[in-house]
Length: 272
Image (cartoon, rainbow, N blue to C red):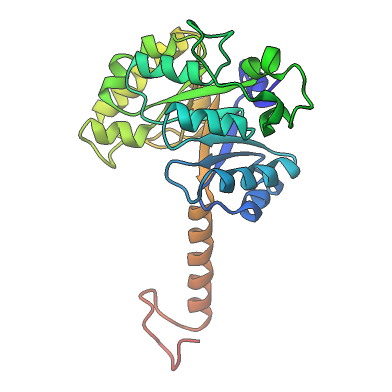
């Protein structure tokens, strides 16, 4: 079974790092230095499907596990990423129960669906089945293995969240606190009472439906607080910010050694 899904269903608290740059080497470094779960950002990050597959191969070769946030929840996107071997997905901007139902259908072979509608069959020839070396893939393991989070980012999604969470085949809800605050009229102000109340409503209804919760830190909620609130998956750092922080720190240390002031204006001849 999908080890990440098993761990979450067993109640384990899992942290992840975002991969935005589409770089397999950086993703491997994340795994080897304390972030064994990598969430590839196909919505805002760099690259296409084959870029994400390359990143996934690097993570898995280093002993880590990957989640992919797809750019959208269309049937075309979902069937392609599943065939290419992704088993753990985050689908952004899911606002209605019908969207959630369609996503669930697209992510499961028809034995799980209704009316013969579901994931298209190409099991013997795709990476998802290890190119046909898993003979029980379509019949048994694929539908059990897939882990699907739908993202709650709008007031419409909050209003329908109990029904969305209740959809068979949707394993959990990924709360997008930044986007939800923005769509509630409080962009870059997650601490405001209005988004905070919305977060609490989503958390209560998703947990009440017996489904998993995922999110990012922010709005006064760190890893420890989110674990206490019942979240199973929290994606924290991203490699862009880590690089920026490290680069800035190195520049500041250089300037201090060279006697430059904090504004970068030379206090001694020559900048280097």
